[in-house]
Image (cartoon, rainbow, N blue to C red; front, side, top):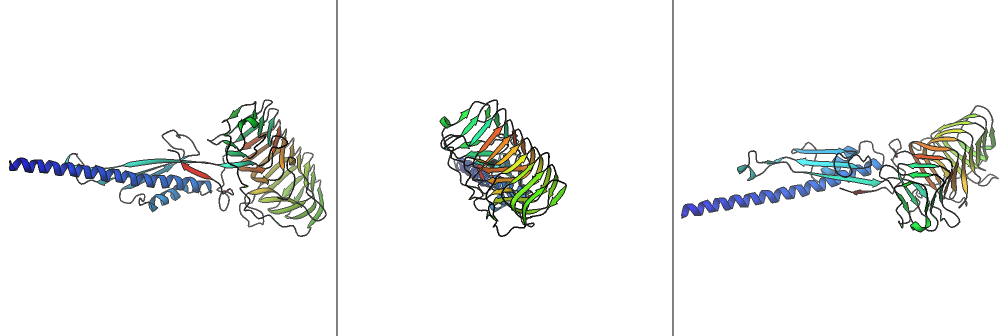
Length: 404
């Protein structure tokens, strides 16, 4: 009888120990999951900011949750694109896997090693915006894509109109790649989508605020140059250009820096124009008021400053004065031209007209505008890479979330 009692007590003790091990294993999995979640989210936000070593950032966030890669048999892997699950192969997502091997107290009595290696995985993804069309649509569609135009962003796009919103017709196509989307404040009844649109927009979305409202606009003081006109090979330097800049049938290089321009700009007649580290601020003053920026039958290559060291605005290649009352019109005119750029075209109170032309980014291209009109033209927005910019992405509204 006593032997049976001790035998029963031993079995009960073993079962209690196994239950304790199972509970501790479940607790460890929960702790590992918190670390994997933190690693995935930390990595996706740091990558959005332009940090090249986002893997290290994700591992640092896991360490803050008690699990450091290579310490106490912890192993952390952070990769993009994910290698499993519904986001497998999606370059906009990041997968974090955290495992730890440790010795259990009782499981070794019923297994060969007594070691457990729980592991957890998390996937984070986010909306990568680069396109904001902020017009009301009260007089016409703020986004009008027509006559076999192609609109190809590898980033998300916001349309703030609550009345007319999108017109995509006459053989035109809108293709948003990389898992990004079109978000429209208004309803689907205000959109005309005759051409292929992929993916279909998300309607009744929240209104978006100006993502660069925090940027301080340059200040006009006095004129450095007046009525600048160029018709031969020339190099121009930063300064205040009153009465505009006209370039005709010329090859022009803009030195790095800030160009404050009143009276608009016209580049035309087969000109070839290059500028690295430049910001053009379109404003009023010195006897000239707001006027259009026209690129006509020319080849243009521009990149924004990567820092403020030369006087320009980081990440912004064209900045339209916020007081320029050009709603419903197009202050940026691109006609029969090839424009290649790294930078944000920030013209929130006027529009962009791209006709029989191509506007494309190199590693990033942003557009914040009142409206966009196209005619037999092409827009190409690459997957945004802000790693060259000090401070990373100029947009401060990236939203990352756990998706798996």
